[in-house]
Image 1 (tube, rainbow, N blue to C red):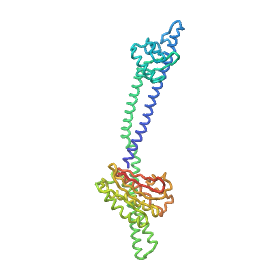
Image 2: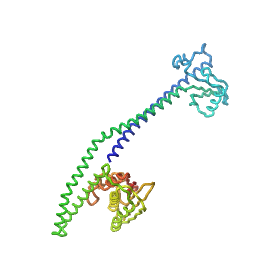
Image 3: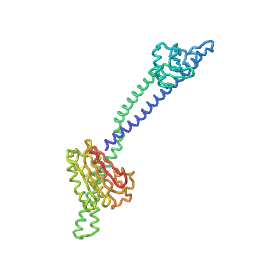
Image 4: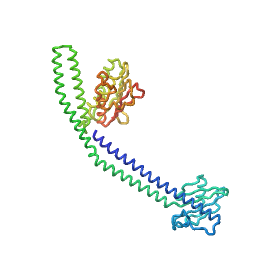
Length: 408
């Protein structure tokens, strides 16, 4: 249990930091992309005004790009590289303006233009250019702005941020792994004190319980059929059973609750365990059916697994309605042993089914002896399943039936 607690602490801390890093990496790159894209669009808007100024020839002198208000300083004549294509209504290239770029030939420009017109998009990216299409009565004007430097910067920032995020995540994982022992040490000490208290209290309680039971047996010889003596004996046995279960549950919380595991036949263990419950269910007028696959093997503690089956079957027989149905299915699926115990019953709150595994939890808040046990049986079943590397879950679809499924 402590090992799982530490693992959950490490995974939770790593997942939390990883989520923050993921949001930061995505946020930084999206922000950079949008800012870069907005700057490119502003530059294209300026180029459109510049080209309209050149075509109108209304100015005495066409200013240089570096003199335009949207240009980024005196080096803009060399850093802003673009070309403009004018096409007819059919998409045929009429003329091009390549004064501010020297690396594009006519054939390449024609190929770019044909692809963009066929795509039907008014703006976007094509290779290392951002383009915008303007349509008027005479045809199309397409502005191609070279954004290779911006693309390299965006890609470089993305790679660097991903690498930094990954390295940071690994570092946090290693640091959490290193310091997690200190973080859960108070909880470990508390658990150790709790287990020591339960074990010591269990041993201390066994002596007076044994004395009470022995005294009741002696009294029953002198006063036969005395209801008070029988009640003392019954409650002493109940108390002894509860103390034994508490001690056993405390041991299941240890790092290695079953130091001597061995391979055993789950099928044979199930037949042995189910036989008395089958007779008990039929004696109470309840339907009992079982399907146990032959030859199933498991590595673990045979007695503990049988105890887990007994808890589930006892629970089914106890809570099944009169003339109700009880079913035990044990089979293998995907290399795992599955143990299912089904019974009909009345469940008022299906939303609180998982609370059945909480220690000392009982649906009956009055905690009457007549309506259930001590509330630690299913906790023991869960601890045994998890100690064998498995899981136990509970299902109820309609509130009229309940199914406990163990997968090991």
